[in-house]
Image (cartoon, rainbow, N blue to C red; front, side, top):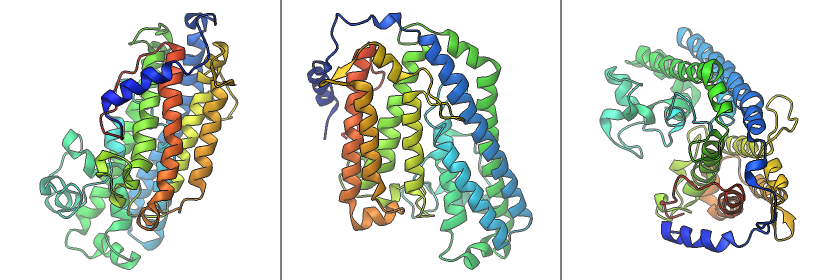
Length: 380
């Protein structure tokens, strides 16, 4: 377990481990604008366009289910929820622009389902929201009662079987309110997504691409920091480390309630793999629609001739992505079952993900002359 000061000391040690030296190319000579254009036009905006199409379909599916809560319409809504959740994994790392905390509203988990849930403030639970009708999804305090995790609970966690679950939407005293809450959640997801996409297309894209400097507030430096922060905190720790008990947040003990898609149970591995693909594709500048490679971090490192123990650092990082993927491949599709039955396999995946934290956060940032804009304070 590393405290912040230990991370600082580790950084100093690893700074000497990257093989490129002062005789290499100048970091400021690379065309950063080309990277920003590729990121914006071929990865970020197409990813949000795809996600927006999925969230619109999700909203429609919820409206159909609300009007006619049958088993078939529930099945269709669940299917669209998963498709949207998978698409979400490809935009979750992009927090720059007008709408901040987008990720908090759409994917804060564990969701606050009821008075016995992980975060038991009864005034801010899904059940209390539904039964009282007193809720405002715009408020920051409501972020753990909305988004994909809240839908996970409402579509899978209300009962042990589908017949009993459907009764909440048909014969329950609050059936109308249950149906309304589901449509409110999907409308909120779709509205926020449309706002973010519109912001990128109509103004922010040009601002992002034109901010080509090398300072802390440049688009490139901020995006690289956001990318690494997402990888370290939301992919490595959030999806794997916290449920497996690898961090102080879970007190060193396995914590299945922190699994993404906790109630549906069979999709947490799928979501993790989608997220891992998204970060590796971003590192390599892969076009979202065609997978054709454009200018990105791998090219920048190659231009700088950055080596790690005799191998191109870009190759070391990509190899480590593949090793992490291979480790994760043996995990149960249901991460709750994996944590309950054998958390050590989750910890093995976490360890491989951690190796790339060092390569990205220490070796890569040193080569690119970027200072981290956040600190590791959760003890992991």
